[in-house]
Image 1 (tube, rainbow, N blue to C red):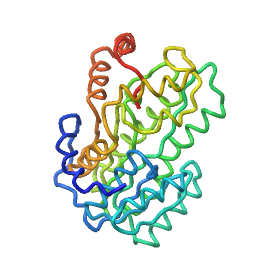
Image 2: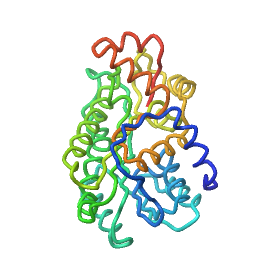
Image 3: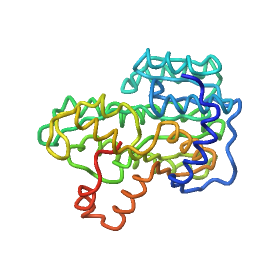
Length: 297
């Protein structure tokens, strides 16, 4: 896949129409020559972030549990990068990766905790194994990635931590109990850290994507959907029909949020709509959502 040199600018322009930024920064962030760490970089948003940050002159440290996906991402980039096959649920491995980044580049400036998985099952029927597997990646992976790299950023009093929550960190949807729990947890963790670092020059961004055209639905541990169906192929087909945003557009929106020093970034018109519905109907939003919306990331 070629590096999306031109796509970055186009997608930034298009993404502004569907992105929501709460802007707290006082200056634009510079990317050239800086070190960006991205987990979940073997596909989807992570790959698009790597391509667009490389085009902006970043030096990259990329991690994913999928070695083949990582190598495909690396092949699409214009310069060599640090690659690490990494299970973000393994705390010791994440800390070892941080030390490898320090040894290779001296520090890190942007840490993007993007890796994530999904399970679709009712709370009553979901196994503890699936629940713990998902939380290990979606929540503890964010905690480990943040805490492993945070000392570098605070020592230099510069940098940005970006944690991927979801629109499902704003609303709860039946059969997404563990996913909701992880994404609400990421939101609370990220907002707390931002408050704690308020007096520093380290920014913390919480990202809430709506439906993004990634492989998350295909790779989900799928048992039952909100409509009660256990047909994963049908759910994937519905997901692909309803998703509105490409990974490239999502990446451009995230990068724009980093650049502006944003605190929260919503991605996609569906994320805006869902957030609006939740604000208007904080208790009964699902009654309205289920009439018009399908599964979103």
